[in-house]
Image (tube, rainbow, N blue to C red):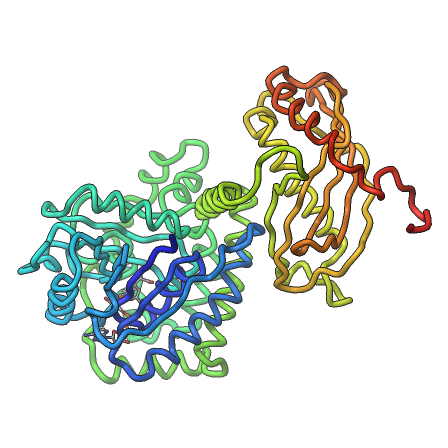
Length: 487
Ligand SMILES: NC(=O)C1=CN([C@@H]2O[C@H](COP(=O)(O)OP(=O)(O)OC[C@H]3O[C@@H](n4cnc5c(N)ncnc54)[C@H](O)[C@@H]3O)[C@@H](O)[C@H]2O)C=CC1
Ligand SMILES: C[N+](C)(C)CC(=O)CC(=O)[O-]
């Protein structure tokens, strides 16, 4: 059954949460008294729809239903998870929790608060055990981090359940073990922000120069290795100890303004806002969001290719989504097996306006890789030095796949022996076959670089499937040569 998330407060962050849950197949109800909330969420959602699916070649589940409630009571009805994202005012948050807990019981209530501690949020609550901090990062629909901060009063089961829910929607719940003001990340960001305000106020750098200093250098490093791993490498062969010996003393030098905060005057606000307008005023905020999102996607996909940092979280989420498809789909024998689900993404479209030819081969690999995993020729098997290599492919293009089409890849085993699998793959839009690929896979000893028999346990899984597929009608296109007339 489709689950329901309830979002109280639909501004920048609430809108992002709504998009994250909806695009991951949850129904979402939002309560926000702002008459503009529906329009604003619509715009955030449009950006999310354009960006989130591009993080992966595994299609998103069917989008959930979005509804706007006229009260907190209506919004929380039937919710499996509640995320509070109202303005950063403690008394407002307390009022909201009281209303939520009058209408719902035992449901996890995460708060997006950037700075309040969970024990502060829980003060006077009817059921403090279910309230905790779930602090996300903007854009919530793309960035995986959510800092999960419980207090001593929190229910450990509620926290673990919430963490699992967040993993299901592709997030990385970082369990913050001790509650402090501003958790981990904002405490850190605050220090950087403070120094930046000083640099502008003292006329040392403009907002643009500060941004260049970050995005041309250390900002790129941070996104992939963070602070400590980056500095470990910077210590040279002697690593962190040498790094600390060399740069530790500079903490005593006047390199920072320490915790001295610039006075927050109108003049300072105007100075910063004026420079920021000059730097980026040619773009609307929505345009900047789209630029940011596209950059993040390129960056995060690169991390995914390297199975590193945030890329690992994305790979894990792909794995879960694939598994969900297979739970729902056929895995049985006696019919071509549906092994892959795909969605045609913008980057798959060529100058002819349809899916580019290399993607048909990609779609076939998604299908055959899933089949090979099913029979046990998975990454562990490969790590032990054996794999199946594709020796031959014959592709027939029978239709045009278009942007956004949902495709499936099916596999039919034509024949097999201990070294070979002869397969017929169909790339389908519903029942329509848009391409077929006849392929021969050879089992290889990777070290020796030559064909060899597959492991008995792989053959044992392959054999009954191949046997069952003998009863299937042989595809007309099997064995075709290029240029042969179509019947
Ligand atoms: N903007 C950011 O970069 C981040 C903000 N946060 C946190 O997220 C929370 C929300 O911040 P933003 O989305 O930036 O603020 P925002 O100002 O964009 O949105 C707050 C929303 O709360 C609504 N609201 C006010 N009273 C309400 C009530 N009684 N019931 C329901 N909705 C109500 C407002 O109408 C508004 O739409 C804050 O706790 C903030 O600290 C967390 C991470 C990043
Ligand atoms: C500025 N901020 C404190 C609201 C920032 C955050 O809380 C997280 C973010 O997205 O940078």
